Image 1: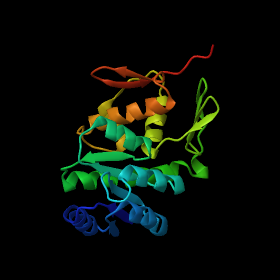
Image 2: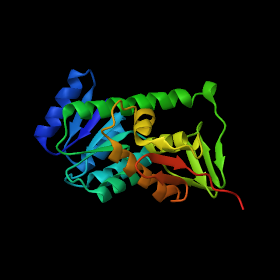
Image 3: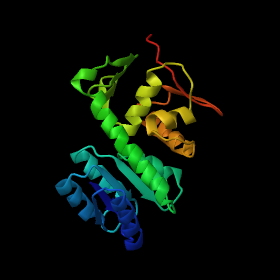
Length: 228
């Protein structure tokens, strides 16, 4: 079930109709407090969440929802502002779209998010246990999907975690933005390269700027921290 949190009835209705036509169960709410209550009672598989809401804004909704239960969040914003996007990623959003957007792209993003959730469940099953990735004081445990640095656990969104694992699995190997979109986001096209850049900034802010090297015009590489 998908919970759509949008205070503009026209947009909320259009999203709900398109998702329902694709076979999804959909519930809509129009303000922040109602969204938190609905997320708690309905236990949705995914949230489509507008940033600007009456009551409490979408960032606070995301923060409260994620504190109770990890759930994929696709955030909608009316402003193409990098700061807003980084804040959204920081409180637990997995992806974002700037209004106006096409319903086709929205649906593609939602399907990709849900596919990644199912893939993560399979990979974290007892039959697919993997050794932790250790790089200096950074420890990435694919089985528990936890990351620590210097012994301190750091909260990453599901997308950020998948991004870090993919990069760290091949240290010093440059991954293009297109390859990252294909593997982490499960996107078949390269229309979301700015999404990659924003998530990289979010990861650096949480884990430190020294772990991921930018290869200008190409992509990114994981650079293990050498022990002294």
